[in-house]
Length: 85
Image 1 (spheres, rainbow, N blue to C red):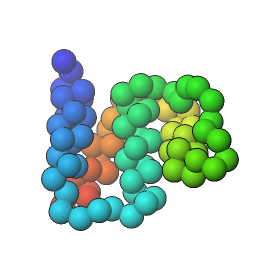
Image 2 (image 1 turned 135 degrees about the vertical axis):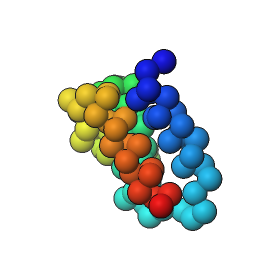
Image 3 (image 1 turned 45 degrees about the vertical axis):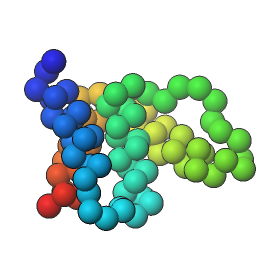
């Protein structure tokens, strides 16, 4: 396992111990960066109009289309460290 992948997985565990719930925009950023870093570009159909949460998640992830997995992991790690400090 690469060091970056290990740091990414550690950040995913560390965010679980955050003492407060981040705002919705930050949660969407975390979600999108995690998905881009772990799975790559968004796939599948966009959720239906009335699935507000699913649509927001899909759109946040879709905005990162083309971002490399390594860069997404770095940004995710940085955001988690910022939230924990």
